[in-house]
Image (cartoon, rainbow, N blue to C red; front, side, top):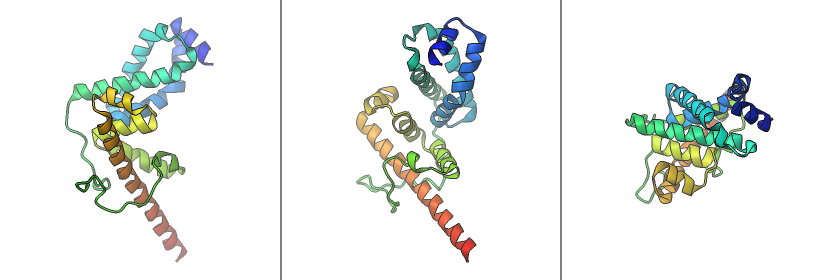
Amino acid sequence: MAPELVAGLKMRDQAAFQRLVALHGPALYRIALRITGQAQDAEDVVQESLLIVMAKIDTLADPSALGAWLRRVVVNAALTRLRARDREPVAVPDTLDWAFTTDGRHSRQVLGWPPCPEGEALRREARDVLEAAVVRLPQGARQVYVLAEIESLPYNEVAEALSISEGAVRVRLHRARLALREVLADYFTEQRQRKRTHKS
């Protein structure tokens, strides 16, 4: 499918472009939204990315790399959008308590979760809760979490993309994970309490 799609895109076939949008558009939008934190910015980023893709599709030598290439284009466009808008990070709600001790530990006890809470949110509702929490993370932590944890970029590439050190990547990722674990812990605690209420 990918070779045919890429061949069509290189011929500037409108049907191929429509298939590209249908197949990859939703995923690209989710990536853009996770990084920018705002729906309008995410929509603009996807549109910009698709224009870039059409302009540079001839440079894609390996059709099987289309998906990865699209993700990289949208990540770069989203980061460029953030640098351009140059404003304060989105305020963090009370559910994401970013209080840490001087040695970098979370100030309140958080239930033990595996390193990546994304994979543990199996239920749709839990995934929705986690998705919303990712969008509400402070900008720096959200960028690192999306690139390192969701897009699986190595730390050195994340550091290069964000112009920060690998140490800063690790710190921001650690804090993002803790905050997201706390959100999930609160969610599952609430679910258990609901079940007890229904049983009684």
